[in-house]
Length: 398
Ligand SMILES: *Cc1c(COP(=O)(O)O)cnc(C)c1O
Image (cartoon, rainbow, N blue to C red; front, top):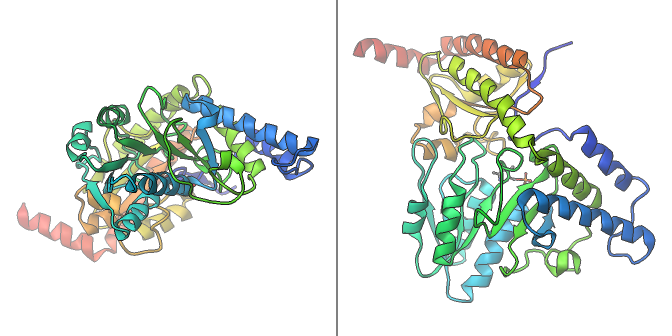
C-alpha cells in the first residue's frame, strides 16, 4: 500500500471512531427537533445538553455559559461583533487584537473599522509572541474588547493568555480568545485565566466540521449574531445541528480527559523536536514560531530558494499531506500574513512548510518525514533561479 501520512491536523482532523459512533443515532432514528415537547424531541434536547456539559467541563465553566455555533469562524464573528455592538452604544469604540490572528478575527475587525470603530493591531516579535504589558499599554478608556488568539494556527506559538486575561480583567475590558488551535493541546481554565469569551471548533479536535462553540462568561452581555427562534437561550437562532453537537461533546471529552493532554504532549513533543532539529540541518532554513512555547504537534519551517506550493506537491507524491502558510490562503499568491508579521521577507515566507501532527503519528512516520524532506528540497533548489542567486551572493560574500 502507498505510504500516507496526514500531517495537516491544524487544517482539520479526521473524525474519530467513538465520535462517529456517538453521532450516528442522531443521523438515523433520533431525528427529533430539540424544541419539540414530545419524547423524541426531549431526547434530542437531552443529547445537546449533555454535549454542553461536556464542553463546559473541558473549559472549567458552567454549561449555561456555552453557546453552540455553526463553526469556529462564527464564534469569532459573534464574540467580536456582538461585543462591539453592545459596547459601541456605551461610547466604547476601540478594539485591540494582533496582526497575526486568523482571518475569522482579522476580517471581522476590518469590518468594524469600516463601521467607524478603531482597531489597534498589536505586533508580535520574531517568535510570534507578545506580552501582557504590550496589551496593557494599548488599553484606552474607550476600549471595548481585547481579542487575542490562544495559539497561532500557522506557526503554533502559544500566547501568555492567563497574563493577558489578568491585565484585561484589572482594566475592566472584555477579553476574547480564539482558542480553536488550543483546545485539546493545552490545559484551558476560563475562570483561572480570566477569559470572558472563548471560541472553539470541533473539527480541530477529531469532531465533525461545521460546528463550534462560544463560551460567554455569565454576566457578559453581547448582541446576538443570528436572530430568529429561541434556541440557545434566545441568543443563537437556528435548529440545532444535533448530531454534530453530540459529536463535538464526545470529541472534547476525549481530547480533554484527565491525562489526555499530557499524554499527547509527551508523545508529540519529542517527535516534533526531532523533525525540527533534523530538518534545520539543511542550509538556509529557519524555524518559525517560538522554539518551546508552541503547540505540541505544530512545525513551521522556511526553506530559502524554495516555492511552497511545489514543496507541497512533491511531499504529496511522497505520501505526506502538509500545508504551506495556511489552508485558507493557499490558492492565493499573497504570502501568509502570519509569516510576514514575524519579519520574514516575501521570498522566505513563500518557501514555508507547516506540518501539524496528531496523536496517531509514530516514530517511524516521523523518520519517514525526516528522510523525505531533504531530497525534495535539493531537487527544488536545483531548479530554482532564486536559490542560484542565494548561492552566488553567499560565494561573493565569503
Ligand atoms: C480553523 C480555525 C478557525 C476557523 O474555524 P472553522 O470552524 O473552520 O470556521 C478559526 N481560528 C483558528 C485559529 C483556526 O485554526
